[in-house]
Length: 372
Image 1: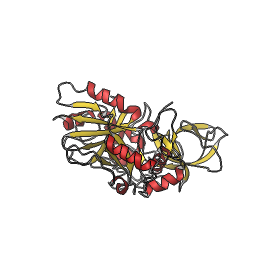
Image 2 (image 1 turned 90 degrees about the vertical axis):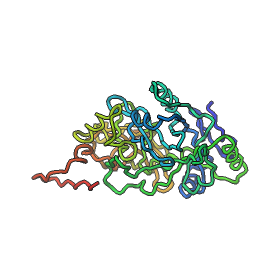
Image 3 (image 1 turned 90 degrees about the horizontal axis):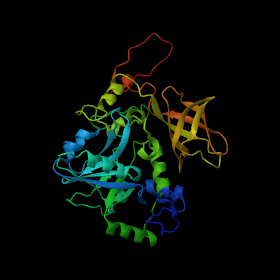
Image 4 (image 1 turned 180 degrees about the vertical axis):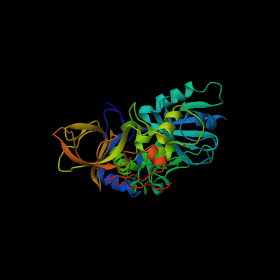
């Protein structure tokens, strides 16, 4: 059975498969407290990689999708590692403290990412290690400010999620008002004494904690993609609207860069991420991996699902580029569940987003893309 350092906290329900606390008795209340800055989330599904050495930033810049060569200490960003065809292999939050570049990645990927980075060192002056002695906690800026983040070089290792801001060199495909615009999310890296202090306060009832269900619900509501949930071996950054925070379109070459540029400037991604609003009348929600049907055709798959404390049953899905938005059915254990798909990445994302549209003599009315 998988374990958790926080299993001793009252109400803790541990994930028997991969470990970590799913919730502490009431996921909906935990969501509200987490969103209001009145709880912390122990992110046992996140782990830390430390990259040291004089060449660390230029080296990471040459390997990944993000422009990191001139990253200033304390500035939060994120990166993707792509395969030669532009498909997503790894993802990580990035923060440099002037001496070390800290990467926060999903635990399902941390070992693979660290191993790949070590194989790519060659003669560069870099050192890569999994910092298993460190832990990650998350919450609002106000909630995490009370946590003593590790500060090896005087700069607290507190990563502020840039999502969904369009970073310099990035591009956002979502055209509608973004529900994640007010996202307040910080992940802090702490050492073992601070982790034990937090655990003791939670056991004593002096500190509220929120489990993975709460953190995931807030992520899904913000349309924030996750490597562990929403990515498979065919995923392109464009499909997930991840170009806005994790890809720099005008930096130097890196593996997969040619595909990224080609799809963005000349083509269209074959799939796209959508928001899913599920009928809440069923007692059992469809699970991740459930097929989505429009009429008799399977048009995609549900990748993330949660019960949100305000929005009800919600999810994210990856569908075919031409799949219609609107009413669909999602497979569930008790039978199909009615749902509605809401556009995140439009069907014409890619070339149409970067090349001005020409007015056509057509009955169709196409909205002009926003100027960026």
